[in-house]
Image (tube, rainbow, N blue to C red; front, side, top):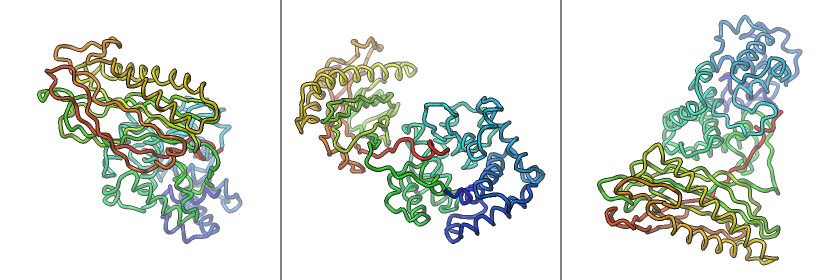
Length: 470
């Protein structure tokens, strides 16, 4: 681990390509010069690399988050900077002074960027850190913003600095990751804002991988890292390349095509996507059901619209030999009040989970050593799911969802996509598409809905070095 590189890069003191040409001693001496010229700290040559990196991290954080300006920093020692940051983090996190005092300088900075507090069980998402590192918001501005405000601000910035939309469908960890990559490319001046605007989030990730590959020599191994871990590797953290263990994935609806809408032409559809994934281990006969909160595709869909995603499931771990069953359901809830639609979407998702879990649990118990176990379970889940969806009805009466007159709520499409053992891994990053004609029980609502789903399987490694770095 050599964090001095990361301090020089994050502080804007040297560029990525300049650092690639420097030795460790060159970087160390450069940071000593920067600290000596920007603070009141003395005897810098006497400190080891880790201590220097911690001092530099304090300086960079206080400057980047605009807690102190260069004039104020010039009058401060490393201890002054540390104590200032501890006060700021106390306001941000509500942690006690003694708890913060017990943390090292690098971990204090990571806490400021969004690393979970000691003892927290949740995975950090670093949306706050992306907004700070990208210089989109200051520390004090972020303190006055809710988590949703911060999330929506990063979504706006990602849309402004890339050629794609649909970031609302990203979960917090994925959103913080693409934000971190964007901040890295901008801070290191690897790409200009004009160039970034022509790139998707995947394009930006791939550029980062190429740059970090040149830096580290790790090549294709970098593909297995999360975006957060990629950026940390660029900053000098030794990457943890995990192998021979379960990997984490998401099922991704990359776009939704409305070829004929569910409601009549006088009204727009408001479509919601339910995704429930069942992973089955054919050896242990264990079936795991993973639910995702309902995803809003769009609130004013008309015939001919193409809604771009990605709209992704919650991440889940799989071994290469697992079977996977994905239940997809798109429902129009446009006849319900806008404020009721998410609640109704949750009810529908809960119902789908209630369908998938017992079927998987019952079937798996009767299969012993059959190599086609995953396929057999998938067929049973598909049959039970399809039968239950038929009972939804146009008004979802069985859920207690009652809309007003002219109700066109109901199923737009439903499907059960089955991946036999080994097929899921082969499907990673491969685009697929299916078309559907849904039911239409209300003549007033026009023709039966016709739709297409464009989908793929994507890697999503969990945790990683950012969450474990101590």
